[in-house]
Image (cartoon, rainbow, N blue to C red; front, side, top):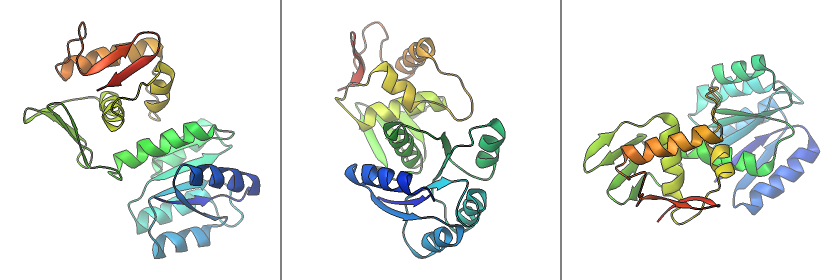
Length: 221
């Protein structure tokens, strides 16, 4: 996938570009508003990583311009982690927001979550008799639609996208972190997994879909 990195900090550009390329992404880096909008208008792009403070222009203006040109995901990268900056970024159309300094693996997790919400991955996933349509954001069981909360859906999508992979509780908490402010702690995660199991018909006392690896985490087979 093609990532556009709009950032004027040379160190961050070099470090983050190298990391994302090792993860299999194509990365183009620019440091100003005009270059960023020209790239989005003229070339294919799957996701934009966007700093608020730029050499020329600012990230908010770039985000507005992107929204006028294309329906592609935008994640803000910035040292401004105050509430006003977060709300401003989300109000003008950003999909997520991560403050500097950030951990590359956390950013990668956020990117993958956003890309899945945009259907920029396999559009239909199957898990037993469950059908997950990522393009429409719905889950069906035996032809009947299930009503899941946003966090329940995100959990199920994570498991279904990585069958056989054991996720630690810490990894799951990182994935379902919610920009809207819904607080998710370790105890809350247990409740969400229990509710999800119940909704998909997976007996919480003897689960056959979302399985527990004692002392490690959860996985689906």
